Image (cartoon, rainbow, N blue to C red; front, top):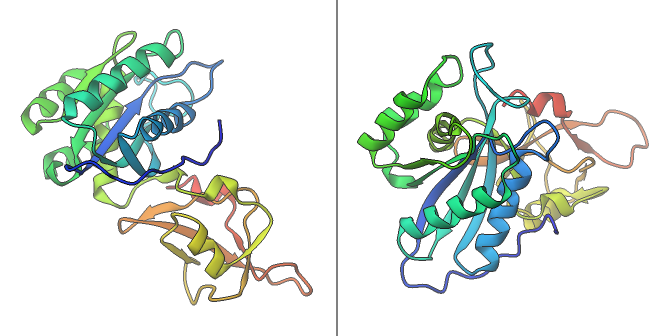
Length: 260
């Protein structure tokens, strides 16, 4: 499958911005939840039901009392939904996870309109980064907040991370993107203007100081991994100081983006 999700225009009457999160879909031998999130986004797009703006990865608490496959992260799709009621999206997601989640997984999903995610859900999500939570806490909160939250496989433990992912995405300041339009097709060196024009990246900048402009060249190998800062997909770069280099800037090392 191509890593570019081929977008279609929203030609339905009702369009809503929705956050759709999934968690704990993998095992140690399978590909990760990020891969499955991209496949789900592709399916929704191919079926003419949604337009995907970005898919973000959110790091949760790593603790001996928490079961997880490798890193305890969950994924959130930020999309425009024009496929009918949210029960339709929930049913599609449920069937997709039931079919594609790995054996032994505890897969779950959460669905919520972006504008309806409240402060309580965001506070819960932030606590999931440093606190051991349980399913009952997640399910009770989802019921109060109106989040469509459901487990699909195993003991359904993924409900904890799925609910956390929609809350963390709504904060606008957590996580890194495993997909925005165009980033996985990039290779080599590209100008600042071309990079912004060809992808869903919103901002390109260094940690501090003045960033690249216009025709300045940016090395994008390996593929860029923007992070979520102030509700934008921000690509962090650093100046190349070597003389006669083929580029003026390069993306920061992956070890840096892993902090988000």
